[in-house]
Length: 297
Image (cartoon, rainbow, N blue to C red; front, side):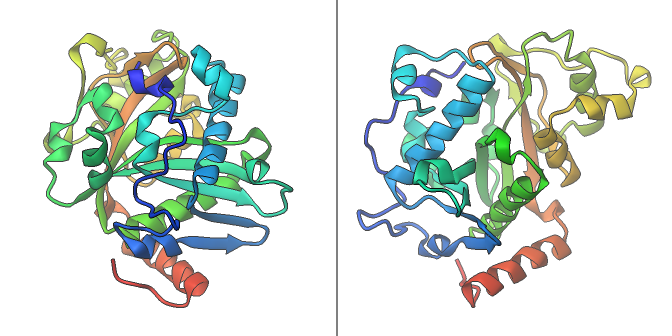
């Protein structure tokens, strides 16, 4: 487990924001805001909004999924680490809620190359060798800490998260996305079917293939390809991972067990040019409808 997972951020303001809450590195991203009925997807612009996302993460990861919290995390009831102060936090908000904390029902943590440089590294580097990704010539984005409140865990909320992510990718001109995605549980034998399926059917190309750190490496090639029931394997994957695969994500070599978080992680990798032009145009049009114009980053 990465030591930063349970290192609290105490009162720090996310560095991409000025004291007034405006973007300092890419001001056009401040305009990322999409309204769909009584729901809204946008970036956090204040420390209070970041902490609301951290409380949602605590609720899902620790209270619902039974991750093991250290005393500081239990006291704060927030899933917080040092990286939170350097990145963007995508929020799905229920505009009918009576408080900020209860309004944040979905979140994604988005880490650009510049944010990782300010922090010192990407989170994924605690589990995988990512030198090939860092050397990628275009803008890269690490995805992480995605979760949705159980009362809003439906297609509508997930679609809003994806819409927000796609708009961010378009505005920030992201060319490569990656991150650690989790399967629930730490029993590799019980997860042998989905892990083997990912290895045989979705292994990343060699030029971008990450590899789990040697001391944490868990083989994924556990079942011969000919013995895999693809439908059963897909049914065994969590919805988020299946969503990644639908838009062309591939995986790195080897899994990593995170015992405190009660998960088995895989590294997902995707070139954004694999997302069709039609898909990107769809979100460009949504952005233009919401903001009136499409600024250039």
